[in-house]
Image (cartoon, rainbow, N blue to C red; front, side):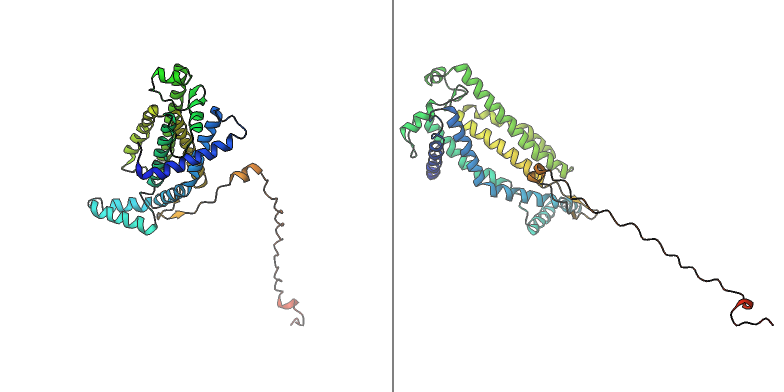
Length: 316
């Protein structure tokens, strides 16, 4: 799957791999599985940091859509017999608020060229091809690396002779690959479930709810297509899934679902306490006790004396 228009990205990914591996090789064995595992994990983290602004844009757009959910429901009820008018009004509402329904596709589209580049570079290393600026020594170092006894360039459907050519056990290699693919499937399910659960809690009567449930249970099955991928690429996929899961949890905990008043307006929520503040566990400042209430002054009006007892009066 080598695309000529992505050749510059292949070389960029290869050079980043070279830099990271060289850095870890200063205190770890260059041919060790730990060195190459850390190289792939660090490369994944570096790529995800680069597209982190896209993630924030996606989450903010999604939050705006959640805040507009009551108004969208009202438009659906108002124009339920005119779908064209309903779609026009909903899109006008989104545009006026700066919400983009397609904003969730941006991180996926950004990851796709990176995934293709990772696949192409690791596949070239698995085939022993010193391409994209990689030296022969680096390629051989990757081919000789083993992670939990499984060769880095091996895939699940590789023949026994090829696996044994990497000086590795066939059964052990397939078990390790199967475990990594299972972890990839599980993390994919948890990531989709986290997003779908929040969406359904926000809009219980969403007409797309059933399709979202189906997607939640079907998406983990796509991970099993990675059985044909090299172990290094599966490690990249597991790492990016774990990153996405933690990233979503961080954003959702910092930005709870909006609450609405009777008119459908958003009720401002107090900011969540950050992790550093939780770790510090600083006790709240003691407030001075309120002053005691002042005694109520009751004014007594003098009673009116009879005329005979008033000063200066004379008894007739």
